[in-house]
Structure formats: C-alpha cells, structure tokens
Image 1 (cartoon, rainbow, N blue to C red):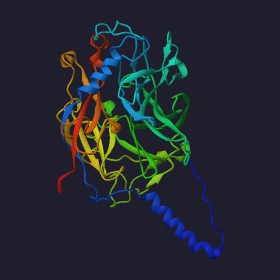
Image 2: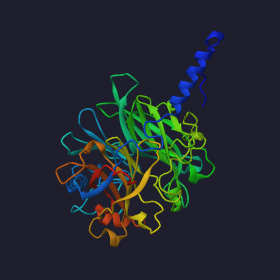
Image 3: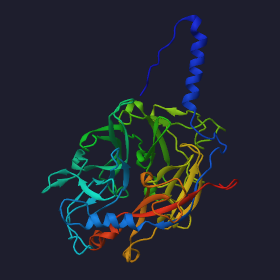
Length: 440
C-alpha cells in the first residue's frame, strides 16, 4: 500500500521541506535502544519453579462438570488483563464435554477450533466464551471453507486492551488471529492464510467483528509470515511479533516484527513492518537494506534470533518486557542436540528489532505423571506479564515471571482423552536477573 504525503510547492519553502523530510526519515529508521551497542540491563533466567496454584486452578475449572459446554482442555494459551481486573484467556483447539473422575473424557468429545476463558479479578476461572448455543456450541471465532470445501479456521493468539481509537476513553479488546486452511503433510496444522484482528466490546466481551490486516502472498508456503504470537505496547506503539513456518521442517522459524499506533491495531493501513536497520547500526543482521519501518509488508526482513538461521525461535515464541529489556522465550528450535523438543531458552535485546543475544537455557518444563511414557511433549511457552512482577522471582508468592507451556501427545488423541492432563497448559515462575557486563 502507498501513502501520498503533501508536497510544499513554494520555492522559498524547499529548505524547510527538505529538513522535514530528513526528520521524517530519521523517525522512520529509529527504534528505541542501543543501535548496536548495549544500553539496557539485559535479562536472563537464573531459576524457576512450578506454579502449582495456577496449574491446579485451571484443572479445577476443566474438571468441573456443572456445564457440558465449557473448556476441558486446549492449547495456544495467551492472556490479557481487562480494565476491571478480570483476565481474558485465549485457547486454540478446545475440547468440551464432561471429565470423568477428574481424569478422562469420553472417546469422541465435542471440540471447537477456539474459545475464550474468563477469569475473575480474584483469580478464579468462571466461564467459557463460545459461539453457537449451549446444546450446539461452536468456535468463538467462526471458520469458513475454501474452494473445494477445505476447512478454514482461526486460532487466537495474543490480545491487547487499547482505546477504540487513538485518544478515545472507550477501551476494547483486540485479539490477533491466525487464519489457516486444511492441508496435507507437512501442513497438518494448516496452511497459513492471513493475520486478522478481532474486536471485543468492554465490559461485555461481545465479539464485534474481525478485520484482515495482512495476507501473505509468498509462493514458498514455508516463508509465509503470520503475526501475533506476541504483542506489547511501548512508546505509543503496539509491537506485534510474528514468524514464518520454518519450524514445520524442523528448523527455526524466521522471526518478524510489525507495529501499529495504539488504538489502530485493527487498521491495516496503520501497520508498519520492520525492513532492517542501516548497515552497521545494529538491529537485524538481515537489514543491510536499511529500510527501517515500512508500510509494505513485502519489505519486512527477519530479526535474526539465534546464531544461525537454522537455530532460533519456533513460530510460537513469546516476548515480554523485563525492566528496560525485551526478553524472548521459545522452545530451542534447531538445537544441534535435539533438545529443542524439550527445552525452553531465552534471548534478550534492548530493542524490539534486535540485536538478540542468546540462547540461554531456561528450563526443561516438567510433564504430568506418565506423560513422557505416553509420548507427550511441551511446546508454546507464553509469558503472562499481568501475573508477573519485575522484582526477579525468588521463592515468594506470585513473584517473578509467570509463563505457561502447552502439553500434547501429537500422535494419539486417545491418550489425551484418557488423561486430560496430557492436553492442558501448565505453569512456571521464572527468576529473571540483569545480565552481567560482558555476558551475552
């Protein structure tokens, strides 16, 4: 898309016009941070513990059979704090129905492609957001069908609360969505089609609509980028992180970042995409073009996470602020020893565009009893900043950085129905500390 800026025609005003253009160019190329040199404290994880309270609370809700149309298991776990103190949680593929004996579902339970969970200000899960009716529930964000009848579905990813429009007192919830289409191997989890933004009213959480903000056109499906694995605000902007599909081939995904002014996340004309820093000024190592922030998504370049393109982030990494530092957490995609299947690692940067330092080992997330024998794996670590503090972590109460990770037995739906814990998020508290000088 192209915008046309006004041109000052008066000959005596050419000097002022040139000066304004230079200022505009500097603003487009600038990002907060170090420009290649360290100007933030850095952050790494120095310890962790299981957050059993949060894991038990979600299990309590999932095992409660008071209603047959509520959540009993899901993945894709993200959350956002609402202005009244409640928390909205997003879940992708979701199982409903009853849980027997606090452990098992029936062999063919009802499931939907997505749902929402509402947690009270006191920390209790209270209800499931779905479409349809109690007797015939459907996905909260409905899907469609492609040519030939192939299923097209939506997976919700990160959500933010922002003004309905810049400067407005009215707040809404914006939920980023990934639109995917059924495909054949290796695309068993869908072919990427579009990044979208849904809007919920507040406080009622009524779904108002869905807007497409970006449709990748890359002929190489593996290089199609979807945005929304993480989103957070800074300096009047919402930075939206995304990735291509490199992880489908067992390599790292290429991370990308875009941004939109606060209050305009649902406006595709307001989005800007990182096109790389000028050579020698830091940021993405792929940024020799020196394009800065671009309105054309085709000009986006990856932000290199990891020492090589083969090792770095999966497509579902998470980014959170710890003090003045951006901290990225991911399963260790492309790890040479195969540890990427089980290990969470971290990277840090002084800016959302890099350079990113790491990886540093975080944890091998523990699985439920018997899950390893059943073939379960952990994946999709996600930070929940609203349940976290900036004071490191220690051993007290709710201090430290709360993260969730999903669990699934990828090749056996029977196993995840026999034991519901094999397809539910679990939680850790991380101790984070500044990085010592000279330690990357």
